[in-house]
Length: 464
Image (cartoon, rainbow, N blue to C red; front, side):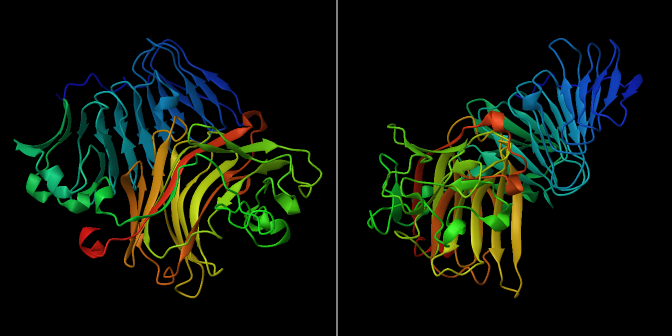
């Protein structure tokens, strides 16, 4: 079950360095070390090459049959973007290292990091610090060489929602623990005692059957937009409701778009540049585009926001969106919640992605100490733009638990001031935190399949 062809690259025999300019650095047919640092392009050629990523923008180009190659990075590295490179090693707090479809060696260093093998028979090493190993059934058999029950976590998508279920599929084999996920898939923890493992070592899937009643469901077979004048029974309010320009963009965030709709700025349902498209397959899309429309306050982009401010709010529960997100620099899709009484903070950010297609940000904003603070986490997701994924949050009086594709990714205490009804927002901002906009990637489409909410069950404290 645990046979892998993964192996280390040969030692570097010659190093190649660039100048202070952004450039292409080319190696030889030997075992080369190619150093980026200015957003450089690194070409290794034949031999076992090691590519050193020093800044975001450094990139390696490798072809099939080019040896056993490694990327060493002081930034997050995803080998899915370099399908012919076998190994990756990173070092730095809050980073991720991700493999591809080959048999990979995926290694972390000092700090708290996320380690993901991808498909293939992968060998994973976390290094020092509390690390999260991401394991999906159906993607091959992985080996974790240095799992620490005292501080490491396995984010496991294999059909298990409780530790008892996981434990019933684990066996002590000599000095190792084997987790049998079924259908020929397994996970091997080297030099680990089964008795040392506990529920705190696993992030598992949510059990929807344990939730309370569904309290809100939008399946997007149509789109009912609210207008106080023209459609006061509409389900979705297509603006933020703050008055003037701040109804259509958050200027304090440095956003570059104006959120429009058929009712934009007093129109009677006839504004020509609506970002919403009902696709006819049970989905609705929000499109982000360039615009020269004279009515959008001199801005150069249009996008959209949908909120339940005038139709639905709830205190506590589970809230989930299923969507296919764009991968485009400068776009900022989000699913979040705000208090219906108009206070801020608190704010519950269930999902924000900054156009890279792999990093999901989750944040709880609060003023419980008298000043604005937040509890946040960034979570690697193999790809948010390859189809539909779910993003959810369980909000109880005691804790917030965030989920991606039904698997827990982050837990934090519920802020003391997050104790009033909140409504949901779905939007796609541009610029601001997401950075420079790549106009060549527009229009960018955020396709939404559903938005749902559930009540907490009466016995929530014993279940979650």
